[in-house]
Length: 309
Image (cartoon, rainbow, N blue to C red; front, side, top):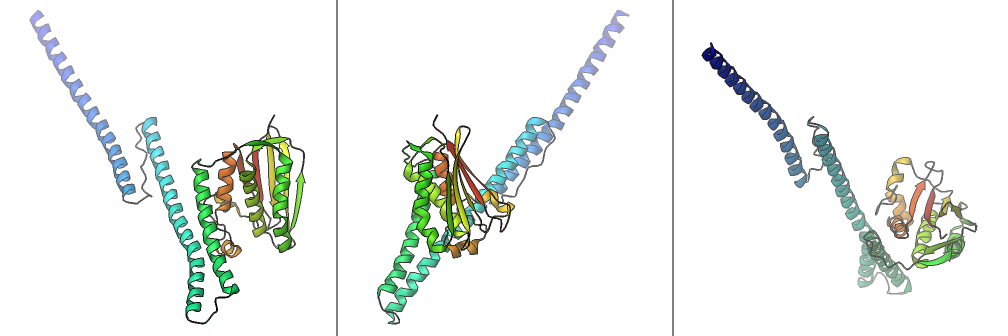
């Protein structure tokens, strides 16, 4: 009986051990195959992205939170790369267009002078100078926004009265507004002091006022306000112009972005001014935003920078 019990125990233990090993191998094979498929999907998507197919996505493998998070993060990365590539292509196309127009103007006038159709008089030289000036401004704007976004700007902060900064920007822009017939108002409350680089921050308000002027028709109005909001000083540039639809609002501070490309080119905008303004405001430790009720309802740009205590 003891020998039979020992034999039965050995046999049952061996069978249980064998069954456990087979079950463990089966479970390991099953999960390893699922993990392998998931890794293969990631590798395949990465290969597609490397080939320029930025619409590649990784499905949720259903292996738990970590793998789901990995797939979601990878999909977000692919979306970001797709958006970046789209922006790059659009930027290059817009940059080529911006350069093509003044270059074509210069080439046409020089050819006319060579053929004797036009004289090299002051009018011709004025057109050529205007085109070269446009190219120079484009190059300067590109360099400025690149330095600003890469934090390469030399910003010298000094205490200044917040209202005085706004008043200086209004005075600089007043003649341009008068020439177009657009009313420029200022409501500058005593908001205390701010630490700003007068030239750089003046460029921010100047860009916003110029942008408002371009999109506000004759007899319209633009108002620059300054007030204290908690620990911030808030500047607002509100116009009664063309306004911006909701789908364009998140992209207005992107390089070369235009809600209406043909219209803005006719107005002389390069699509860089707002990107420069955003970078400069962030260099001052602040933020910038825009709101609009829709087309024809005007737009309001809001800048907030820290107030000195």
